Amino acid sequence: MAEKTTWQIDAAHSSVEFAVKHMMFTTVRGRFKDVKGTIEADEQNPDASTVNVEIAAASIDTGSPDRDAHLRSADFLDVENHPTLTFRSKRVEGAMKKEGDTFRVTGDLTIRGTTMEVTLECQYEGTGKDPWGGTRAGARATARIDRRDWGLKWNQALETGGILVANEVRIEVEAQAVKQAPVTA
View 1 (cartoon, rainbow, N blue to C red):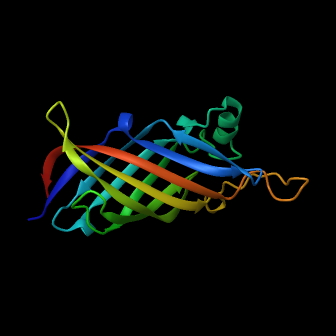
View 2: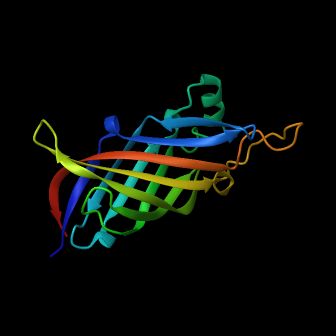
View 3: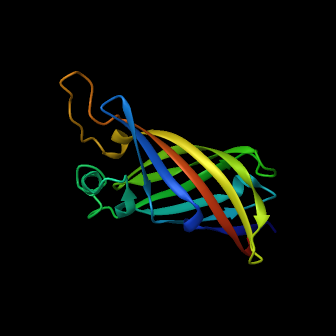
């Protein structure tokens, strides 16, 4: 019987950030402040592990209230009709035995009601005991997506050529998770 371990994402020590070019020559960064999720790790068979994440779309923060309001609007995330972004893994490939190990997590990313497959390139950052007797683990992940695939098509042409907001979005995740009680499958 395979034993899976549940890990709860610690939102206070994790981040989901993004970066996108503005006016073709500067990078604007932002983050989502409200992130929660679980990881079901199968140490004997990492391919049987799962990752499920929910992000409150309205928690987007780029440091500019006007820009954040526009990103929450129907031009972009349409948070009124699509309050949650989700990621549900379909497969995990690679080992997470020691710090520095790399692995891939492929799954369905849903933004604005559209679901597309995305692969996250990940690095295991290690595991350790916290001061309260718990066990924590860390990982980082990156991906690049084309925002238009999820219906985020708003843009503006520039007089000098090019567009106001680039289509490629870089996603960067730093995740810390707390080990929960074991689950027997």
